[in-house]
Length: 386
View 1 (cartoon, rainbow, N blue to C red):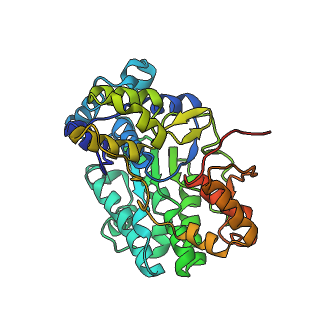
View 2 (view 1 turned 60 degrees about the horizontal axis):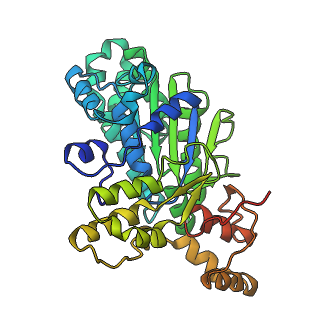
């Protein structure tokens, strides 16, 4: 079982069990969104899906490597979807950036970690640049090298994603696919560490340059737990599609459907424990789709494979920081704490959910607690009332 494995190539080549989510590719191409923000709770396959997208769309500049990437998808659903989809394989430069390492004690260290992640991705494409450097001006080539080597100034790093797309287009004639994972991690961390405004300014500049008026962008996928509003991270992005847990689009691509869980349990011959699996981990509804927590399912399957009578555990607890939740509950008034007790006793609450979350106003509105708990996966909907 691929516990903690979030690289698509590693899962396929190492013989891990993989739940085929490649039809996410078809839906992305069908809906033609320019910039897509997916908000899902942690440990629901966001990073793995981005990795899968990279291996599907990326032109590595090496024909042999491109064929190896295509081979990873043998036997998967996307190859049965038709030529209009498979002809998109290996066609684009892909810039894949994760911001999860930016959870640091101060701005300088957090900035360094983001800069290092950007530099690493520039270096990964260094071969393409070296082979096509005649297409770049001397200034562009030197700036690319400076970013790749971690020597660029902050103002150049703020513009680095757009600059990368520009360089790739000059060399290949093709627009770039941008994949950004865990975009809200540095913002949440900065809020609690006291350098929120500086981090907001940096992330805003990075995103505006890459996503707002970037003529060299093919499309972009961004993932996180929350949609951050009001701080203007996405100001002016009129082509931004927000796909939250409330949206019926893409609802089956993050987390496991019940049929996928049944198929997995049958494969490992532990289907007799399905009632326990359903009771413990069938706790989510994304759009109109019933969804199981994949992290918990995989961990329970790992235990069941060793002992079919294994007892289930709350594997998902403490898989990442709960600072916001702890802070909001600690500050909650008596009425809110009474509502929490109602939920703990198995009851339900009728709450108006707001998809946009603002750190700055977090303590001014008691409903923010429910927004955070819902969108980070601690609560799920019983039914939707209009």
